[in-house]
Image 1 (cartoon, rainbow, N blue to C red):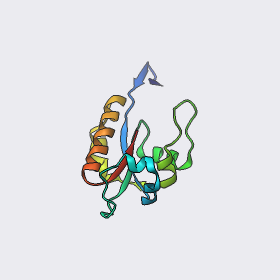
Image 2: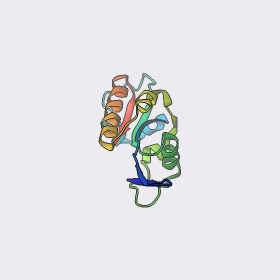
Image 3: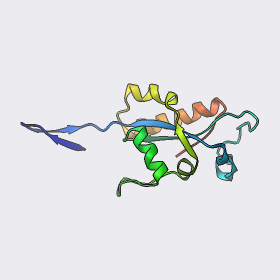
Image 4: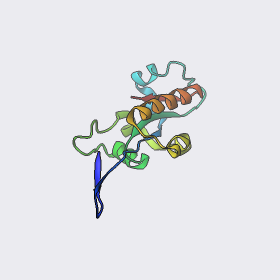
Length: 130
């Protein structure tokens, strides 16, 4: 837990988590593993492809990390290959509501990530998430 100093005492700051959705170039569909994760995707529909993730950074900061392939040492995996190679932009409309409410724990963020991925698949999107 991070701590900041006041004039009188040290107070812990609470981590805040977010989910995010990255629009992926449809060329990602050339990867067998991505296609297998989306067996009901209708290739004739032109529905979007997306990567869904969760982070304690802002969605913009995390998107930049994916695209650059760089992440501070000790934080974890640097990037998702699909997000790095095929990520085009953040689909802000798809995660705004969840993040406005605030996500107070990593476990809740992981659940919302899976829920958002399922929601997008139900809409016909091809989705990857961890």
